Image (tube, rainbow, N blue to C red):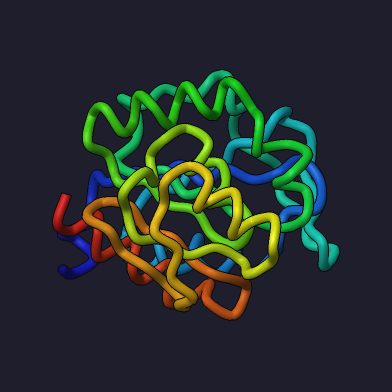
Length: 180
C-alpha cells in the first residue's frame, strides 16, 4: 500500500495521562503519519500528557469523547501509567467493545493488552504482552493465548510486547489496516 492508499484512514492512539511509554506512542505515530494516516491522540484529559522518558504530547481529545465511527483503528500504548489510567477505564472499554463489534483494527502494546483482555477481545486469540507475572496471568485469566513474541497478529487484533517492539508493532497495525 502506498501513501495514497492510506489516504482517508484514521487511527486513534490512546495514551495514559502520565507515564505512557514514549516510544510506544511516538514511533507508531510517526509510521502512521508517514503512510498518510490521520492520527488523533486521546487521553483521560486534554491537558499535556507526560511519558516515562520525559516526552510530552497534548491529546487532541478525551477518551470519553472518542467515537468509533471516526476511526479505522485504535492503538493503545503502554507504559506504567496504563495500569492506573487505562486498565479499568470504562470509557475506553466501551469504545473497544464498539470497535470490536464494528470489526475495526484494535491494537495494544506493552502492558496495555491487559485492557483488551479485560474487555474480552483477546478471548481465544493469540496475543503478547510485556512479560511479567501479573500481565501474562491477566491475559490467560481472560482466555487469551499468550505467546512470548515481539508482535502477534490475530486477525484484526495486533498486540506488541515492549518498547523495543514499537516499530514492528506500528508496521503490523498498518498491515492490519490494509486488510481491514
